[in-house]
Amino acid sequence: MRTISWDHGVVRMIDQRLLPHKLEVVGFTDYREVARAITEMYIRGAPAIGAAAGFGMALAAQNSRATTPAQLRADLTEAAGTLLAARPTAVNLRWGIERMLATADRLLPQGVQTAQAGLIDEAQQIADEDVAINQRMGAHGATLIADGDTILHHCNTGGLATVDWGTALGVIRSAHEQGKKIHVLVDETRPRLQGAHLTTWELQQWGVPHTLIADNAAGYFMAAGKVNLVTVGADRVAANGDVVNKIGTYKLACVARDNDVPFYCVAPTSTVDLRTPSGNQIPIEERDPDEVLYVDGVRIAPEGVRAANPAFDVTPNRLVTAIVTEKGIVYPPFVENLAKVVNT
Ligand code: MRU
Image (cartoon, rainbow, N blue to C red; front, side, top):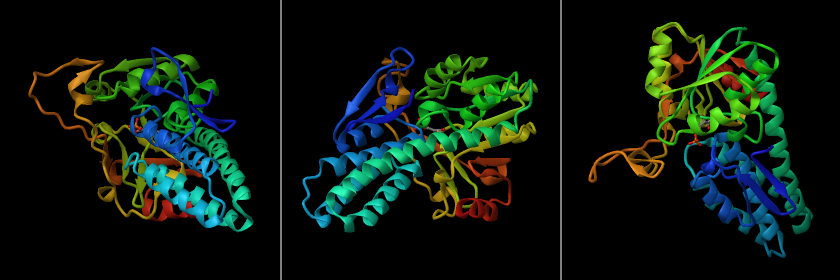
């Protein structure tokens, strides 16, 4: 089942806020609703956000009352602004919007209707390509996993974080489907618990053996020699290979280095932002402190306590063993090698 799809003019997506308790698909017919769904995390994960951006732009095109190419372009520019503001860190959002605007600019000279139809096709193509790209990353990444390995995984990077299959979790899925006997230690991923809520749910469906651990237990398992490799996704990879990913990733990478455990990032080239030289220039989303102060609606700190809630952190490239993309596995030096992979 796809995380997001186009269904005769309606964008359908799994409401991930309800998992693992309830699998519910919601439908949206206005790009503003798609922008809200991204902000409120009905849909999340960098590649899924990129696909949602494409479908949001397709809705804007479909619903436009423009009678001239210039009017349609103006409507699309407005939608692009709203969608771009939905979340700041995952660069796939900008990537998806820019790809849709480039398609519009190519097709608008052929008239409004041609552009509208072409934009809907393009959004569907972004979604289809995402699945194929994930499967290619899965094939490359699975070569890094040996029979019998235990893999530590952070956040959710599976089919739910993409259109289908997944990035880091997609690599795990590919290794499992190749018949390798693997075990996954799943970080619960406080504060929103993507690991506990979503990753375990997906691994259960795929039949991959796994154990849920508190985020704080990762160091214990690595120091005990019980982890062969760490795999994470990325919301944005800077030109120098710094990896911006779910909060806690940096700490994992430090512990992995201290214990000589390879640390792999799995991300499509649409997540690599060559325009941003290093991770420190990437905007880090600050989310509602209540996500830290409450667990499943129950307050866990005294009234009056303040909380901070950065949603992502920067893992410096020196701690990253390699970055798995759909075009192959990229090793240091990342500045040269990432540019080569993205530009070919
Ligand atoms: O806040 P989220 O749930 O959108 O964060 C998701 C992540 O950090 C993922 O690791 C990242 O997007 C890669 S997903 C394939």
